[in-house]
Every structure is written in C-alpha cells, then in structure tokens.
Length: 157
Image (cartoon, rainbow, N blue to C red):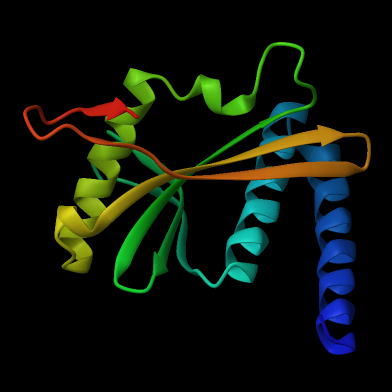
C-alpha cells in the first residue's frame, strides 16, 4: 500500500467516525451502528475491486431491500450487511434466515430486471461486521446462498 492510499484510508476513517458520531446523536443506536457497518462494508468491497452501484435499494412494491449492490466484473453482487457488537449470541450472518433470503431474492430480481442483468449473473454475499470497541472485524462471505433451481426461493449453502 503506497503513502497516498494510506492517507485516503485514514481520511475516510476520520470521515466515517465523524458521520457516525452525528448519526448516534440523532438516530436510534442500533440504526446508527447498522449504517456504520454498511459504510465499512462499502469501503471494504471497493478495496477488493468491486464497484458499488447502489445502497439501500428498495423495490417499488416494498417487497425487498438490498443493503449494497455491486459489480464484480460481469457479476451483479447483492450484499447483505449484518453487524453486532459482540459474538455472545453468535455471528451476525446467522441472522440471514429463509425469510430474509426471500426478500433479498425479490429485491435482486427487481434490480437485475431494471439493470438488464440475467438472474444467472447474480450472486448473493454477506458482509459480517463485529464491533469490538473502536475496532471492527469484517468478514466477507461470497456466494452465501443461491436460489434453488426447483423453487423460486433461495436456500442456504
């Protein structure tokens, strides 16, 4: 990592911290923490070479919401961001249940249709963020689940 990218990473960290401080003052604590996790996941995915094209995308019918939508080459990646302040009750990604997967699939179908991307070029990832003090442990789970060929609903891999 060169000096310039270290500087930008440091500046983004400062900006994220300030933005989070203001959110905590106005928003519910859990909502502010979830949004901070989305900010960190966004930067994490960008550093891994993905192009984030949408955040908090909601379908017009309200049947699904996508935290992050990104492209990795020709693949449209739908990313669910989950966060916790400890692992006392298990990792954050265990909260992505069948109902959540179904909502993600509905949102992905809508977004892919509007973007002109076939559903076969859509991948579902989870970014898990665990906050421990000022530090955040980020884990990226690629291809966390996929739609079953026989049903319109996804199944955990």
